Length: 276
Image 1 (cartoon, rainbow, N blue to C red):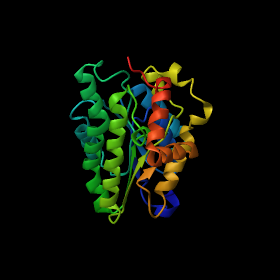
Image 2 (cartoon, rainbow, N blue to C red):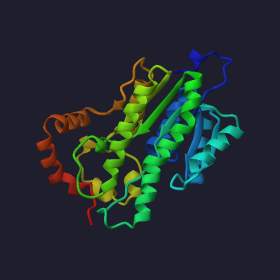
Image 3 (cartoon, helix red, strand yellow):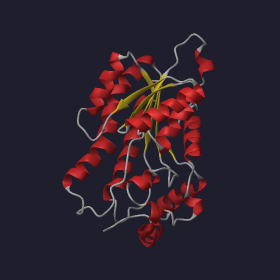
């Protein structure tokens, strides 16, 4: 995927990353810039996006386009695509990374909070993918990374009720999309990391809680993204990518010893799930 493989006179390709202002999203921006991509940065916080854009310019001489958008709003994806069309930007690499957690039991937040969550975590992913996929198919080249979670592959626990469910949806969606497009030059993957150092847990108010988890459960965003980009460059891409041996082992136990996994989840969930 390096720029050398495209020819020196070929215009640099474009990548679009949602949730680009921090964490895994910002790391995707850095590493894709290093691969020779220009970036479309999408998130709600303009100042944070500008900081990432400045970093990419200073470190990689990378052009970035900033789009401030709240994906909980209907019409946000359409507005994003209209902006791309106005600037004649064709997206080759899409990273659907925007997401957050909604702490507590299902009955605690009001319905609008759940509706916004579903819009961001599932509907916006599908809509943005649907709007950008035809161009990738026409050009016979494209990469789609849907950032899911190992939570979508393991036993559910009380609290954060829709989080694992939404990630399971993304995994199944990505698996089907990968099968539909593997002969059309478009590679699709559901990235399923476990606990990863980022501001994710600061935003949803669970940092103090998850800080008590053992160190071996934590992944580094740089490693997660590097593994993903490397995997996406292979001739055949596995539709589900699980970074870290520890999480591969956890998923293995959940798949082949589900009764044991359910017991362990019930016993340990209070360390990382708010159920009030």
